[in-house]
Length: 423
Image: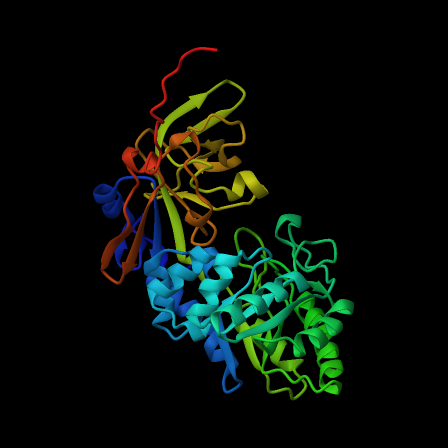
């Protein structure tokens, strides 16, 4: 766990605030973020680049709360977005448009128009059809759109198949052997300015070699582009650096950046990186209350008020999240339990066969490494209102997203005023 989440005399604190005190005022479940942890991890990236031109673009999909995004924007970062909604959030939270990079495999016409009108730094283009649409919309708006091509280097990132993006069989990017022709065509298109090349191979990577392999293939393509007179300003190497959830040995941001710079071979292109999980993941936890203990004779279940709709990663990826009581009682004996939620699915679990000190109804549990892909992947399944989000700064905390109400669940719904007359 990050040292901003620490035990003092058996009680869990986030920075200088007792988690139990927040729970008393806010209720459970809630996501809890440390502003210091966000900024500290971001600064690790910035310091590692030293004087090499760079732009760190926070991956909005990892945590899109406005308070989190505003915190990142105020540190001088850019934003990596993948939808019109994320563009809206990025602009609303204070990111200048010229520090926004638009990734994603399925940009719609309205989304493309919104991004061009806003004046974003560049689109990471995924296909020729997408390029044609961007060109068309730029001309209709009387503007020029800056683009890079997202190339797929066919590098195995050695991660979960659902978050692998750099293999030829994945839906993302353009094969390297097709990219050269794409750049040639784009060079002659109206409304288009070519400024970069992009490559993203996956998420939760704990080995640096796939990043280096991908960069080497990008550099080879740069040589071919130079021979055609196509000289780029930016190399966008994406995100994907992993974190420690359990027993992983994840490289630090500094080690990651140094590995990239060591293989730049004197190139002075401005480097764009798009970290999300490695900044946000261990900057947040999910706090939940024990509802009941259920013992079937063969299995002991700790039923909590957080569920798969709040934190999807265990059910979706069989992902591990460390779980500990908010209040520890000495060297309490541990028992093997399944920690499950109230949702009507056997797949609704936060942990299986996990050793946990004996807990009772009303106790608080903390689910660690929940700052990334926690709330952003949550849903209203089983008509459950989504959890609150809270941010701590030193001795202060603020609710940065209110807990949803039942009225929020049906907002926008309508029963049509039809008269049923039978068949």
